[in-house]
Image (tube, rainbow, N blue to C red; front, side, top):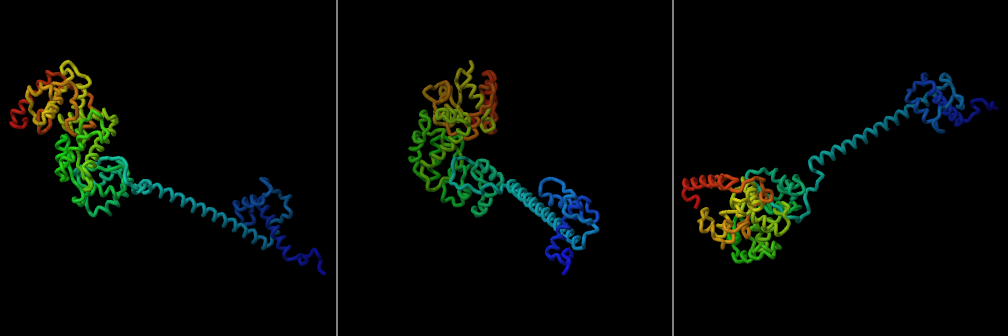
Length: 440
């Protein structure tokens, strides 16, 4: 028999457990001794401390260890066990650091990608579903860059994305380009519908109708009839019935409401649909300027038609300010009379620049602002957008008179008093004398 205290009397499994226990105790002790004889780093030893403090945040004393061998007493096996555990801890630490780096890198890449997509507009919808909502007008000027047209479409909310629309245009336009002109569109159109509206490749499928600024109602209906080859009476009947469009009760017809512009009517459009499109455009301009009341719209169109007839785009705002002074703040010289030649000739059914003194005194002409105080009984033509906007927001000035002294250049002189105006009138008379036939 062997002695029970002999190493051979201890089962192999028990010896392994004892070695593991001695190694663990040695690790704990080495932690206190900073592991100077075990070849274990300080980081590893601190991690051992944390691992063995299972009863809470306290320090394990050497006296509490079941068996604490010295470094010299450790067997090679126990040393290898300690070293293997240290390597395992370092391996786990490297894996944790690597995983943290990978996760951080993925988050950073994701944020950068999202930011770039936002910057490039890749996260925005590429097209609205359509078919469109509110009527808007796009004006394409000669030489306007394609990118500028797309940007304008985006600012008007016609398209959802400039990049998305550019791709759709390249695919659907068949090489065609957007020509200068005025286009009637809607907000939130699908890319396909917007491309169709902007590119009229087959002119047999649309009626192209250009309406110039300040055209009178009879001139507009004549142009519509000629360009569409539809009966003139069809258009005349519609424009003489303003009630169907829900306008001011003061309106006797659609004079002033037929917005100028370049129209491309679908070949299937009826005369009423065409006229309604023109009216809707004019009303949208007024509403955009804050004029929503029907009666106020009628007055604003009346003023704007005079502004356009008397001036040009460079001085609409100035003349609008002077007209406002005459209407709202009349002085002793004006006496509440506008004295506009354009209103008189409208009532006469002519377009001459010269009117006689008898015609100025004719009160039976309800559009005669020499003989009748205040505004005429209605618009004297179809004012364009710029004239309407200038009338809504007139220039603040103290002028009461204006006269164009050069018909070709549009040069206009302004005056505060009638005496000043008379001097300007002399210049106008001299211009007419120097240019026979121009002032007739």
